Image (cartoon, rainbow, N blue to C red; front, top):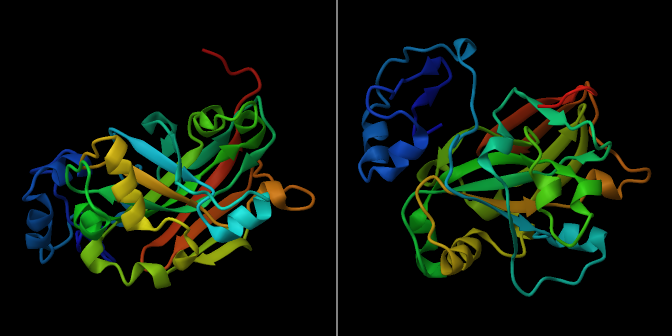
Length: 273
């Protein structure tokens, strides 16, 4: 939901001016234009659209590992002195209500409910104090992990970049429409069972710190995404482990944003290209 472009009764189409949300954010007038259209009558029904990932073509997706105190505790790690950053590629994403795919080479598909931060302005060496001025808004993310592949080495990338293993949605809530971030709750449910629950004040490195830190080693562009890490309760630390499997339904809910819902399917055993 950009401003009020998405309404309960339908969607106000901004495609007369922008082909993507990334393009809108890259235009300094884009968010203002969206707000100017919020009084328009919706022209598209919710049921007639397929929701894509909030940003379909981000230049960068930066992921943060072990960034909740509760998750650090369950992993047995020490508190990290600096953010642990790795990357995910855009082609690995699906939108809300789409199926996430467990690849045929793994049976350890884990959920990770996370807050996604979408950058709104080009940024390099932005201070913590000015960092929120560079954020366009927030969404939900399920940073699905193939734990066996993630543990092949000390590098997380293989376990985070199988096609259709990350879910991003359902929409963008702009910073001005978001209630106080630290007081919001994050919950993950697997087949209706609550498996993760935290408030965002459990983040070790909060959003301003992450934006500032990431802008120090790379130039952040409008539409770039920072996935801020997951809380305790991931499937790998259940006894026995709780993996997502074909037929499952998973939900990531963040108060003030909404619910990201996805089904789980298994990749065909004979699939190859």
